[in-house]
Length: 242
Image (tube, rainbow, N blue to C red; front, side):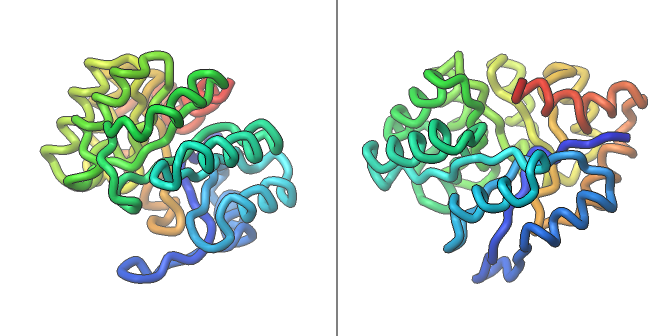
């Protein structure tokens, strides 16, 4: 079954995580698990330049996202969008409120979201950890920018209350998409497909934090039929970037 991974990283992640992965290692896993393309970002010292190099080296295998920190200021975010999106063809934006310590619905994100709206770019945003990246805050951001496709990475992550909130917020706001990596409850993948929308639940691995085999099994065992799994594994991510 063909797959597009909606969320992966390259680079080294020290501290508590202690994981890392190079582009060639990710490509090897993609080939092993029949992953056609991967939506890619990086937050370490290689950053956006490393993603650009990987996308050039492995042409057609990566869908690059520009990693932004709104706290760097509007001018710097604009510069990066112009350099990586307008200049190098990056296909979306990645935000991590938890890492950079801003609340997901803060107005400091408005210039980033406006840049995404103008260019019809999806915005991928980490979810699931208080106080910065809770589903309710992401929903308030999505409400302010209804034209921007807002992907709630991890759909609430590992906390049942936040997973439930991710589903409820996605049902309320049609521009919210749910990516399922790191979320342990396979049954919620099926629930999202049936209740949120068949085109708004996305397969992802969160490499190198999780192994593709684990994330794939969650989809295979969630209770969806083969046609629905094709949507989750492949069709929905493809449509998001169409």
